[in-house]
Image 1 (cartoon, rainbow, N blue to C red):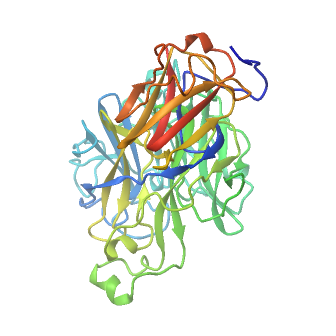
Image 2: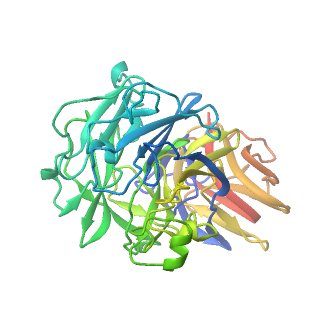
Length: 474
């Protein structure tokens, strides 16, 4: 049956879903390239129009909690110093991630009324950049089901907890990540994200620092959300070498919900001093005079658990600024934290847009499930061969699309690249169509369990086709 020697070079993927977002599993490509798929513009979904929200609302987080979508965002009608006492954190919810409502929570009196959607107030500077998470750790206490970090250099990062995601309290009074831990001259001044990592069995946080006057990202971990490791400055790689170091304002790193061993970052790339608008154009859209002399967009990066670098497989923007002057001001187009599923075959990411303008709002963009990027085969045909890997499961399923003339065939090889009888390209049934999960088969059927636990390579023959992800299922 071939050479199945399992060595240190074999990558154990088990029954994980593997996305084609980097070269982690790829040994060779011929007439195939990794292609990024920018999301579709679905339009505005939430206006920041209430008196305590306004022009400078931002640093949003979207959490899918079962059938409920929860949205958190800073409310701030006027420009001011980071951590101003008037900053609040607001809340909206949705049953589909598309239509949102702002409940009157009655938790705080704001502007003379308790009829508001504020979940956090009077705890500056935490309300400058409050970043919540749904804690998925097994056995987490019910009153700590939600956790958050917030704060600036002056306060350090303070931990908060909540049972319902609405009423919050400090986990302890002093910061859990004090500034004394951070060996950089400036830090914590934007959204500092956190999550429970199933892959690492730790809490992980990615937060902003300045290094050589450039906005950079540090990584830090904890077993209990109270005591944290020393920060590690994240590096950037592209095609095996170093990637350009650019200002990344927010990093929005989180485990992908369909493949939690993969950390996705849809980050805000900030271009200081790169002015597009004239003074007259800025006046016409009524943007705050201090906020139109820079530009920004969204980029896509990935990271693997425990590693001190991001893969910047794609250097171009993931979401370009839209048509019109409103999209080309400073600190707009900033992604919200988390990608969430909003339909049977669809997921969404949200961007803060029209910053510093009266039209400030949250905007939705949609993608197919797993559809950040793909291995794309040319019309003439090409192939992708994986590194040696081991799997568990009975069938191989693909997330793919082809043209009417295109198709995909899969061969399973031994580690030396020889086709395994019964699973050769000649015996493979061509996969044609556009599906999120299609089980691959050969003339003898789809059962691959005889190869489970053995080191094999996968050879994908792609003709006018995109392969987004694959998974061995039990």
